[in-house]
Image (cartoon, rainbow, N blue to C red):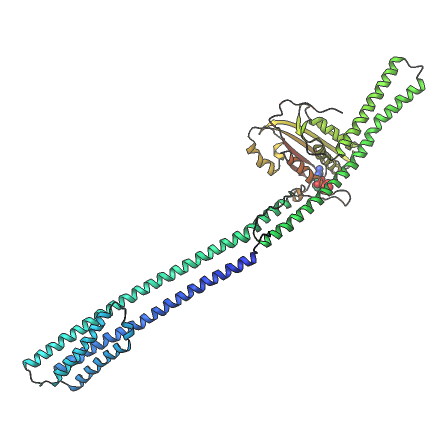
Length: 505
Ligand code: ADP
């Protein structure tokens, strides 16, 4: 069954519409709240108007009672009518209110008040007990109406204030919710888009450092999956091309070896040939002891030639990575022998490697390391100079004149190694040196300052890779026109107590 994959685009669109829907919902809700508040504010002005009208009713009531003017009476009745009008106009608003009951009491009170006023106006203006009683009744009713109006106005004002407070809080919650939703959407987008891209970025970084590792990305997103597929294809292609390049670098080394071997084979072969010549010309005259010596010399020289050819074959064969105990001195001497043919007469190669130092390493790869380093040193010293290869075995922190050459990467490794033993190998030349501005790049693949055909820029990157494969590290220190030192640090595995030295050539 085909696994359905969503795409990042779809996810972003869904996320976008969800965010828009939430925002529209929030906006509609806020709009409705504002409408409700507006209604409440309008109603509160109605209540204020009602309260003001009752004040006017009472003012004209007082004037009429005091001065008996007909205009005051008419004004009073007009305001009573206005108050009733306000009631009728807003009757729907009064339903379901905290003050509904008071409002209806007030309306009834206004009706009673009006009849009381009418009765009072029809009475004789002379002070009579009946007039006093009517006056008292009007005043009481008027007071009652104003008290109710006051209380209604107060209740509504408080209610409006509390509604405004609620709306403020509500707006705060909306803003907080939208901010949180924004952060959450950002996080989700980051998880579905940025995270896989970050992991791609990391893989790309390690590829840039020369470590080819394919991306195992368990993503449900189409784009990420196809991107990872494309990357993996590219990585495989790069890996294959690098392997081809390394192979061609090795073939170039083999060319170097061949000239060294040809040179080296020359000596035993000419020795054999001289011995054979003596034997064939003076076979009968020679005393048997000398004959035996010549024959044994031929045998020795043939052995020497055989060993030279064997090491060349060993080096050229593609082999699996396999570590064994090796005598460092023998390994280095054997490698130097390969390049002897390329050493100009005034270039001196000296070694200072204690015979008891052995390393646990892949022979072919370590030979490649020394070959590349020595080749570079020979090219750097040009016509005249000195190349020194020395080694020491030590526990942590006791190796003066060595550790200052360690690369930063090497030095950072040291504290975690505790007191463990290590072998340090130093390759120093008195060559042209490396300018400070490029020393950080020399281990990068394809970095070269040599002319086309002279250098591929792969030598040191291969050295770096091989040393890393062995759990070691390498650093370089150089001064222009004075020379260069490469320092290799190789860990000594614990099991390596009893070392069987390698075979001497
Ligand atoms: P290549 O030798 O093919 O150029 P390498 O990776 O071996 O590639 O070296 C990279 C660069 O480092 C060289 O081109 C050279 O500039 C510099 N280099 C390496 N070893 C030495 C050395 N012993 N002395 C001076 N420069 C060196």
